[in-house]
Length: 448
Ligand SMILES: *Cc1c(COP(=O)(O)O)cnc(C)c1O
Image 1 (cartoon, protein in one colour):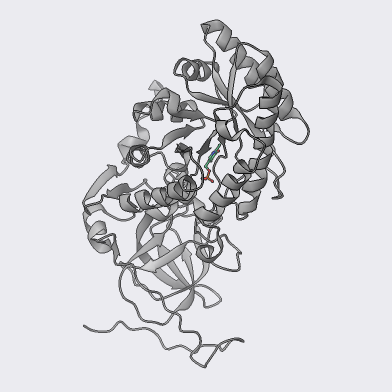
Image 2 (cartoon, helix red, strand yellow):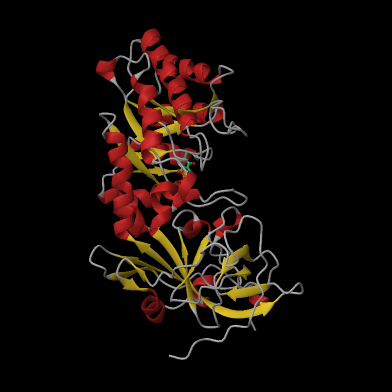
């Protein structure tokens, strides 16, 4: 095969390089996902293309579940819908035993449609309408109260339909990680959480069965969960002492870091983020060492999102062009923009060629196809030369992109799932002009 031409280059020696040839860096290609060929996927389903590996979801889920289950008797995961609510993805989690965690009426309805029992839906978020609250009460869902206004609305709903909702409150607190997420729920330190608990306990309209917190997202300090758990356990113990009731569960929310690398981080995420074992050790340790009566330990609910799905998602794309910027730097223009990869605003995503390339890496800016200056996927990445038409793979993009993607300038692409037998299933169709204009209407006088 004829070798691809690359222009000659002079490489500047930098301090710390072991020899005049520099560090032995090169980029291995990703030619296959599970056992399916990347270029074959693009031939069959077009470019760009989102790919989800079912086996990676199941393996990651089981790794997380085992980390907790081996340390604590009652563990229940609830899949965070907003992290990725494609039905096929949700159903993989539900088939593993995961409940649903939703933050809107729309997500609630999606969970019901996916066959989740009402009593296995955790309903979070600051925006639940009276209709949402009524539906969730009738279905015995776990309603997590976010603020006093919601508490009073829920009491009215309960009176109206003469049914006692099962509730928890969301608690926010100082866990030593700043900025503190104090806009959701009731604060622990200033006494609001205890106040809300007492108001619920004194009312016969609501049944308090749990406590919830979600301390933040991409939390790099496992110990913050230890502190949060201890504070929730303290509230649970005070409830036990004052009212002689034991809570059914304590819910530590989501926020475990995935292995992505934050922009500006010194070391790659895969080398620095805590493992599921680290998080599990912090949380279960705090529960076991608390004052809670050991014969009535609450169920531990986890709403882990990104750490369970990021690794299972890939975005495949194609190079559109290469050009030199005014300062001589190489820029590569690709067909996957920030409209599809919302998380590129805070992560340095990993790009891999889909076939073997030369070992020479050059500092490259990777731009998306949008006619917008903000469409930058990587400001500067050491990357081999890919030619127009060459394919590449972006790794670890399963979380938040397939929900926060925007239909902007171009259509959202297909999504496929590779099953455990390496069969490929289309789980979301390419959008078309018809999809986009479906909800539009043109006033009569403009129709001609
Ligand atoms: C977003 C969210 C989650 C999931 O968070 P991750 O950081 O993806 O793990 C869990 N619980 C609540 C209440 C959330 O808002």
